[in-house]
Length: 120
Image 1 (cartoon, rainbow, N blue to C red):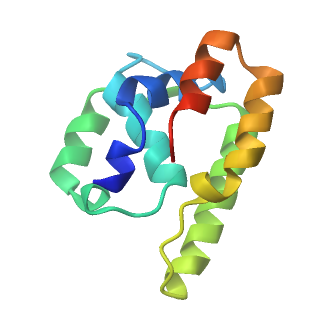
Image 2: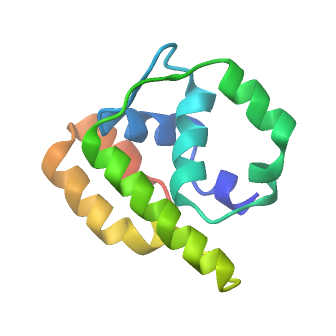
C-alpha cells in the first residue's frame, strides 16, 4: 500500500531504533510496523489482523523512551479525532519538518540519512 511504499522496512526500522526504541529481537518487520501503526494514515494492510499477529508474535518492545511514548499518545489522540471527523491523516506527514529537525539534532549520521531519506 501507499504507507508501505513510502519507505523501506530497513530504513524505517533503523530510524525508529535511532529514537531510542529497543525491541527484544530487533526484528525489522516489527520495528518498521510499529511506527507505521503509530504515526501514518490508516491503510488496508493495517487492518490485516493475521499479518499483524505474525509481526507481533516475533518481537516485543523492550524499551520506549518517554519522548516517543508522548509522541505516540499525541498521535493516537489526533488520529482518533480525525477519524471521527472522517479524515484519515498521517501524523508522520504533518510532523515531518519537526521530525527531521529532531533527527538532525539528536541522531547519528547513518540513521539520520536513512530516516530523512524515506518519504512518509
